[in-house]
Image (cartoon, rainbow, N blue to C red; front, side):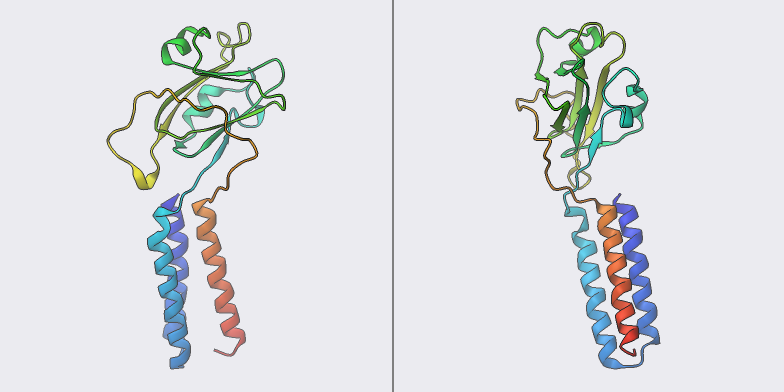
Length: 206
């Protein structure tokens, strides 16, 4: 994500440099140089922007047997501060368990149990490591309604101390959300802002 955002920013930066070369007015050159400095500052601070993604478990099918959860999890990247969004019917629930209970579909010693009335549970991935979830209703886990994911440390905070498994002590995170800032979106905003500024400069007769 950061590399893609970097590309967007570099495109805007190259466009500014091209305009500076073509501009003969010293005053306008100074203005554009200031804008370039602002872009570079944003680029430097970019890795420290906290981003989070809400992952709908199972994609459009949600938390049920029609979803290919193994394929979905294997093609999705999970980072600290992302969230899992479980959408399900009253026939299902969500139980977080240990690896051994996950392998044997046991619900006797759950880490956390979720059964929200609105049919949606949002769980914050606050720590790196493995997380295991199953459906606690009769036979659903053994039929394949189970999910294991590996949560990677944030890109700007990766260390070698990645935990193999965690046992969180918190309950469900509010489904009414926390602000998320996507770095790709931020890069696009910078590009659009740059194009807008250049357009105004051209209209002004630069």
